[in-house]
Image 1 (tube, rainbow, N blue to C red):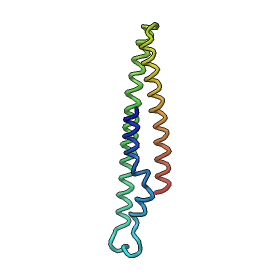
Image 2: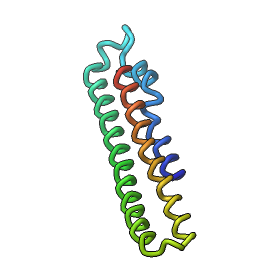
Image 3: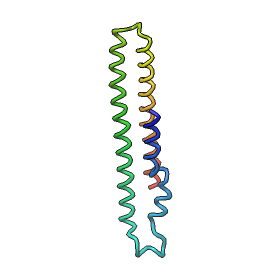
Length: 118
């Protein structure tokens, strides 16, 4: 989970720097004729859309994989109720699943903030 969290942190750089990106994208009065602000804003918008889509896809794939593991472990746990190692593994995977689901909520907050700034 921590490696995925680190990957998401790196991928959120564009959101963290959105104000800076806008400040460098919109030309000052002296550069108005040299830079197409509309095109530059469209490119920033597309970059933001791509980043949001990629991160959401990664998080949802992780949730799906972890859910599958949890389901399998629950089925095994039904068969072997006395297996403490299996119970421990199930709890670990359930915790990871909850963290992944909360990461989806974090993603929503980050995305909303970026869109409001843009």
